[in-house]
Length: 310
Image 1 (cartoon, rainbow, N blue to C red):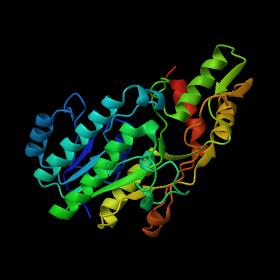
Image 2: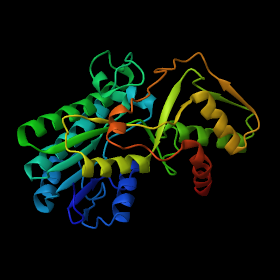
Image 3: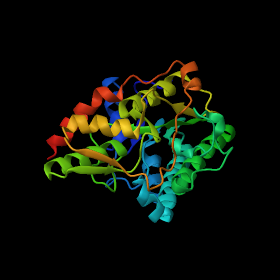
């Protein structure tokens, strides 16, 4: 349980999940918040991170910081992806533990789970099958963090734990094709095809590829809920949702919202990578937590916000 006057550091509070965490904490009257922008505190710089923790001594750390790229870029820059994520995580966990932060929550990703594991994927599947080579640098850094939390808890009796969400979305995001998540990438592409009078748009995946999406505010809710309601952090917890949809159906939903009147061509010549990555919700459900937001209800608002940037 964290108190209203606990000093809470939210790492990368201006980004996708961090901003959702900040909104929730402020709405719940957690006012003793430690916030630093990337320009104010470079988490890749060990000395700067150490100085920050030694001066501020936060009680709680919510680590939303990570290097994230579009899937094709991951394979082009595997060293940068692995090094920077490990550096961020090690700097923060070491300083948090060194300067007596008792509670820490870290956000991993469902990419940590093996390719061939049973669906839906339970927490016990970790490291039991072959892992996804496409995201190797990303999941390696996340698994390292899970194990660091586990060792810290065992050795120092802390409450450092990991939440594993599926694909995260919010009403704002990157629109550039090299940075955008799949929903925003499709919105951007359908919009550009519409205004340029392109009579067709090619989508890489088909109805075979299923994806599960979770709203950033639900992830923030999970962070605060588990900080306040559970202390057995030997386990990491899947943050689940019921919003599983095929890329085929998602493309047609977005086509309808954007009012794109022409054809979708599904490109079956390219690999679909992982066909399904649905998380098992049993553990979170047994702890009385579930997501509240439905993807289909938010797609129109997401498109409206996209238009506001144009």
